[in-house]
Length: 458
Image: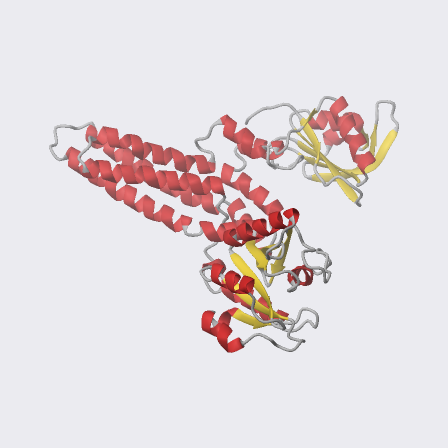
């Protein structure tokens, strides 16, 4: 076990609430709680039990009424002794109890240090630790389910299996190299490397195919709401979020900067971005907003283009239709409660009819069709696949791509009759890169960077 000092932190959100939790982990967690707890002798209680009492200061003044959970290692999250003090959720109560723990010898935990100890003590691997962060940040049920699966070790098992097969090939090659009296040793070794490299590469590519979908689950589908001023962009944002997120007026150019919100539409996670109305303007601030809107439109996974069907198509409308023709988009004809001025026949000559949904945000008409279209766009393909059992972050993706590159170099070198002992360098490098995903081969600097992204107390 990785023996360290004793750390303490507030593990629940700071603010008013029914319950707050102060957590300690380390060799002195039990001695410290014994000093500040008034009630049953906690040094004599069974592990994984909870006890009523009071936390007191050095003068025996009661700080709060609490329930204390005793968790003795190694069957704990960090594999160390853990004490969790369940107190009232006010800021002052939690802060006073934390200060008492620190005065008795605990050290203030760094962000993510509890999870870092779980990793260092072999309780979880690195990909499982990252899954915990994904679980906390999950914005949909599917993202949470995928994080839970990864926490169980779904990704880790695949990576470790690939590394084991690579290790067996390396061992086989070492044996054959040790017997140079056989003329076909070099040929056999090269063939083994090629077969294993291609097999592992194919498996990695299968994992990478899910990378895009996992990004959508993790970050939400980046969805830009675009159109001219006053076509109903902010009204649509307010409808989808369920509250008045954006200011809605009849004055053109009210929205001058982007407004962002995360929502869940029939299980599809959307990162909604209400953009400034696109038009020609001489006002500097609005010009900046329009330029930003165009950039967001280009970078989005989904574009919701709103047209005002009570007005004839303008040059701006036509430009936006042209600019988004190669993107995944939904075209909304808003204000169907007013007389139509758009020639629908001409419109369908330049866009697919399936892309168009007539709506009235004011009268709440047709918006259910919008939600169904979003669901159909993203749940009829790979996004709904039951194979998405984990979330690939950018670190995983980059390491997998580097491993593929190293394996390609192995195949090319073997085909060019490069000596096997030199080819093994790239093969071993690919093996190490896969090990960085699970933390089997990783540098301390990377660990510090990763765990610093966790919240304090986790």
